[in-house]
Image (cartoon, rainbow, N blue to C red):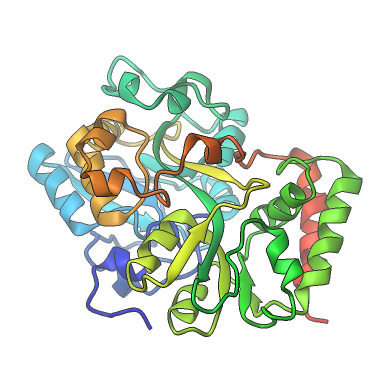
Length: 377
């Protein structure tokens, strides 16, 4: 098991639930300010709408994306107390909560594909760029992202890749591509896991077959499902979370995971390695956005500007282990961190990756295959 005396972010890494948002113990984020009246950690409930106050900011985030040091520093600088509510289930559940009303967050942490969806249905406030500082110091690929051209509705906070973490001593040869799992199915039987995420898993199979991660071709998606069905009997499980302790104890030989998770776990066992498959994978970006009708937009802008500060962004990389899109923050990092290819992969690697894009009604096709794939048979 991972050492229990590590900081919160080391036990539950920044992106351990970034898409699935599996329920974590409230103890894992006990350093956060938590409100009552329905805003409880890892428990999505409706809360009555409230008027914002100048000295309080509600944020809707993921476990591991803030820590006490960050909140204390912001409060000391601005006099504003941050109250954090944590995703418990999915972006879709969060979206339903916003649509029914009673939502009081002024800052939302959104994955790139959800920015597209919420912008389309008019739930995000267009940002006043004149209030924001540091956008022009983002790395080029984050200044005009495909999911939000010009960052008009969101500000990139962190990013990473999806790949494979493996035990270099237990495998005869290092995996280079997703196909390794199929080619070594017998050797890896019940000793490997895939993420519990339809788009990541189906996307990996699509990339291996030479298709887009965001394919809307029914035959291509069917072929990806059929390949995964071939592998299913050899899997230990579909999990976004449990693989960490299992690979540390040697129970697993290889697991599909997010890069930030891999970086955290490898720090506890240097026999472990991480690879982005050569046929390509997903490149994810997590962002900050302000919902329409936010009760305290002034505080929201202060939070965004605070996180855009180079020294603050750099400290988050050091403490929480995810990549920053800020060029100035990157330059403040130690040479060791800048050269960490798990956090900051090469340009050649990034060119092989795609962002997860919304599929509209075609998502039903993916979901049907996912239900069949993950059902007990």
